[in-house]
Length: 559
Image 1: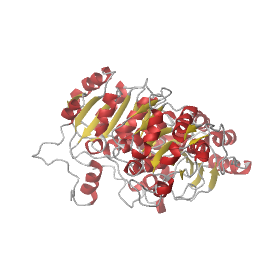
Image 2 (image 1 turned 90 degrees about the vertical axis):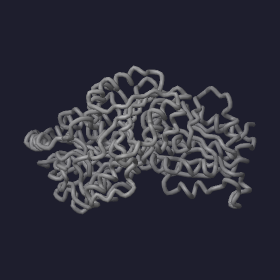
Image 3 (image 1 turned 135 degrees about the vertical axis):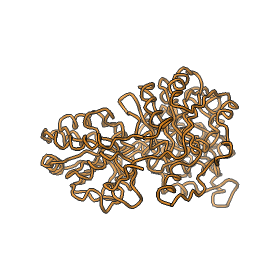
Image 4 (image 1 turned 135 degrees about the horizontal axis):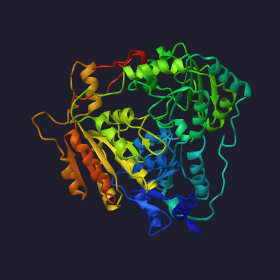
């Protein structure tokens, strides 16, 4: 007989968990007591629950394994909500274990009681409160299965204090059945033939790859399809890198901040094979005007995604890794040189390029491309993210992690912590803005105490740059609460002094000539976090851009 808390720890060991991101509290103290001096896995104590869940998310995205976090009830649990939505939108597999008041107190407004299942139900893949000690093992096993099966997502397991304390069986199931888990989608051959025929007869076909290709690890299948068909390829931000950025058939990102050539390719196409993408508004622009001449074949593992935003001509619901080879087999190799050259000419005529002299994000990121060939780069959200997705070359060895669906400021730095713990031999850089970094900068304590080396690149333009850009371009320069420093003021905080207070070193970069030296210095710092603060002009913009409510073909290409 063991306690419920001890069974939780046994479950984590059985699931071969490597690291648990955890923050204690009154209704989780028994869980943490069970963790005391256990050596089977690493427990990391971040400084805020939001940082904690983003770290678990970064671990999951970078490894493909389930990220695990553990917190107490009430405010500890509610501090996970943004992270649950962030991971859920981007199909990142997490198991979040939350403490809860004892079952006899539920519903009585007890101290630090919240209905975590009710709060998280709409953003988690599954959420459950354990009501009986006898059900605990089965529920935990089910949580790990659900988090990884089909379209990955977040599972919340809410465990009341008395369930943690109660003695019971120590058995933990090897397998568990879940509703719908045994059902295997099988797309009829006729559907596959229909998709292949559309592509075979198209004059201007295009392949649009989304984050589902990463989630499904369908890299070899994707490359085989592209090599056989010679099809032109564009990606969403989340799909970037599924096909290496330097591949001859890759054009670039699409969407409201995509490249002009990529958006034109999509707009001019007569057949689109969309893989693992929701086709949301950031990708399509005005949905009513999205690719009116194209027949759309939509392949995704989630049936709810098909026809949600854009109607598909052919609907394929299954695993990309299994279905794409079937389409490849039926595809005829066609010479599409004229179509490819047409778009390549547009890419040459309208390149992604920042015209400003001096220190620019383009120059910084291109230097990162040179110095860090096999790094994992984790972005925050805002202009720093968009510049990175424009200029970072994502190859087989270099990985990009970013918050796509929710667009969560404060994600980058803690997610980089999780990525480093999941990939200890990799160099981890986080590219963040001065606004986003301040949302979880307390995790500087975590990286220093836990000895987790991260290279932090702060793009400091003294403002909330993305919103400020919209205010300048579409709101007649009414900069309402987006300026973090006025011209005659000193910026607060001093990021380097702040880093020093935590025991970290850093450099402030003010000119293009200092970039190489700064990156080399950071690269040499193998054993501790290093902060690089790049001082950018407030006026720098992410261009091109699609104005709100406009179509992709109406991109603003020049300032």
